[in-house]
Each structure stands twice: as C-alpha cells, then as structure tokens.
Image (cartoon, rainbow, N blue to C red):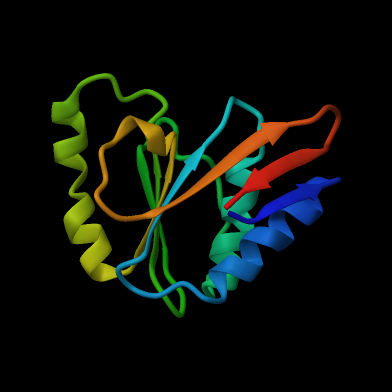
Length: 131
C-alpha cells in the first residue's frame, strides 16, 4: 500500500493526474473517505491524466458523468444511492467495457476487482491518500 500526504488541493489533483496517465480501459477505481476529503479533487486530476479537457464536477445529483479523453472516464458518485437496484441501473459493466470507471463512495458496492483509494482529512487542506 502506498501512502501519500498532500498539503493542498493542487497536490491532491496532481496525484490523481499521475494515476490518470496510467489508466486503461477496464480499470475500476473505488474512492472512499468522508465528505470533503478530496475525492472529487482527485478525480479532476485523474480525468486530466486520462486526456480529458472536460470540466470535472461532482456527479452527486447526476450519479454518472462521462469524460472523453485518451481513455473514456466514467465518474460515478454513490453518495445518494440507497438501494441496490439503483446500482444495477448504472450499468457499471458497460461503462468498464467502454473505458475506465472511478467511483466515489466506492465502499457502497461489492466489486471483485478494482483499486481501492482511501482519503483522510488531516486538518486544513492536508489529506492522507492510501492507494
């Protein structure tokens, strides 16, 4: 397990961008951590590293946002999902077939594969990221 401490949103984004450069179709990334821990900030960098120039925003009310790039990135947010049936409606299998998928609140799904990344707030803009 790799552990990083970032001291600003820019550093958190840069860590996401580094991982985004290595993303491939079929990759599943599960992000966990409390509200405000930097998950969406990390995804901003992840999308840029995957070659997307799209504006990244939290998909909390939309559930899924698609960012085209070198690798299509599907950004899923399960914060408001309460029932397992809603997860089935997302079509995660199809999204993974089309590109990479990053899931905020990734601990809310059972995935046999995927890379788990945990975010922890350390006060101010400092974050501990465990990959």
